[in-house]
Every structure is written in C-alpha cells, then in structure tokens.
Image (cartoon, rainbow, N blue to C red; front, top):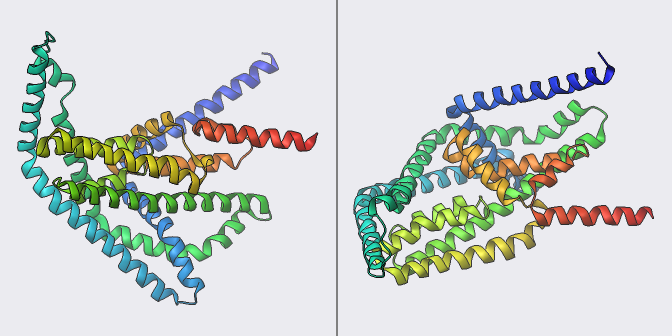
Length: 361
C-alpha cells in the first residue's frame, strides 16, 4: 500500500467519523427536543438580557436588584406574550372555519371568473396543490405549539437568572480553559460580542417592525392585529423569508374580512415596513458583513425547524449566525463563513483581501 493511499484512507475515515458524530448529535437533539428547546431559549434570552444587566451592574446597582429587575421584565414579557397568544388564538381558532369557508368561496369566484375567458381550472386540482385555507391552519397550529413552549416559562426564567448570575465568572473560566493563549480568548470573546450585537440589534428592529405592523392593521380594522404584530416580530428574526411568511396569513385574513382593497393595503404596509427595516435601516446599523445567504436562511429554517420545531424555526438564523461568526474567526474555517454569508459579505471579504495585498506591495 502506497503512503498516499494510507493518507487518503485516513482522511476518508476522519470525514466519516465526523459525519457519524454529527448524525448522533442531531438525532440526540431531536429526541431531547422537550429539554433542548427551553435550554436554547434560555440562552437566547440571557444573551438579550445580558447588556442591560451588565449596564445596571456598571452603575453600581447591587446584583440582587439588577436580577430582580431582569426577572420582573422576563415575567412581564412571558405574561404578555402568553396572554396575547392565548386570548387571540382562542378567538382565531373559533373563527377559523368561517375564514376558511369564505376564502374557499373567494377562490371559487376567481375560478368561475377565469372560466368566462375560456380558462378552465379544476377546483379539486387547485385546492389539492394550492389551498390557502391550509395556511391559516398552519399558523394556528404553529402558535399553539409555541404557546406550549411557554408552559415551561418558570424553568426558562430560572435558567436565565442562573446564567446571568454566572456571567461575570465566564471570562475567568474561559481564560483558564485557553490557558496562556490570549489570541484564542480574544477570538472567543469577539464571537460572543458579535452574536450579542447581532441579537440586540435584531431584537430592537423586530420590536419596531411588529409594533408598526400591529398599529397599521389596527388602523385598517383587521381582526387580531396584535397577534399578527407578534407574528411579524417573531418572524423578523428570519430575514427575507420571515416577512413573507408573516404577511401571508394577515393578507389572507384582510381579503376574507375586508376585501381586495384592504388586503392590498395590508400587503403594501408589510412591504414598506420590511423594505425600510430590512434593506435600509438594518444593514446600516448592523453592517453588511453579518448577512446570510438567502439559500442558507431557507436551509437553516428547514433544518432547525425539523430538529427543534417552531422555536427552532424562529431561532434558526441566530443559531446559524452564531455558527457563521465562530467560523469567521478561525483562518482555517473562514471560507465556510464566506459560503454561508451573503453576496455583500463576500464582496466585503474580497475588499479586505485586496487591501491586505496592497499593503504588502
């Protein structure tokens, strides 16, 4: 056996071993979903609450008072979201059959109108492959599952408190892990800062998006406007695709309830808000280098949704973003970060390489 053959076989074995480990980890996460989901959600909330907690401590406020304020804020958020989902979902589920019936009647009218011009379409065929009424059912079931996650609110809040209590000791622990490797510590610290920066900005922009959408729908008189504002806030964590998914049920409901004109007004409101927030404001505040490829966004949505359910879908982009930032900090894996990133991020990387080459010249 030649040496090259031995090296090739060793590389293949390593690749197969890594794939086997990944499959075991993914299967384990999927089976342990009831435990993993609250834990990941706790980390997500702790990252969001960390900046105000650290800021309160920096102002000389005792840890007990800072944690109490964070705890009150967490309980308030869970109660508000739980009450909104519970009350709105109960009414929406009760009215759902009526909405679906009206929607089917509208599509029947459209098909009959097209038949006058010689365009004959089978009703059964249309509703077999494209049934918009199912979208409302999917929204209701997804929100029901999300509401089920909130039943673990006490466990999630408790985990957030304990994570925040330990947050000041993490730098010392990380230094102890990396030893004298100051570069490794700085890289790890940069990853945490970038992820926290991304989540903080994304949360503020998502809150503004959800609030504007809710107010706009209230003005137009669309039922359950606050619920659709909450959906817009949650799905805004999914760039590009999230705004489309959030708009779809609200536009359908406006079509059923108020007619074509109001439905177009709802669609126009979603379009304007998301173009301004997602394409103008967010890139300026966040920077283009943190963008993800649209294909990666879609694949991460499917992947994390399959593993963790609705919460995985909502956190798919933050989870993938954390992976991208981590890969970006290592020279050997930076190419993977570029593959995951958007075209703007790739162009920015090219500019950085060109500037480095010019400095060398």
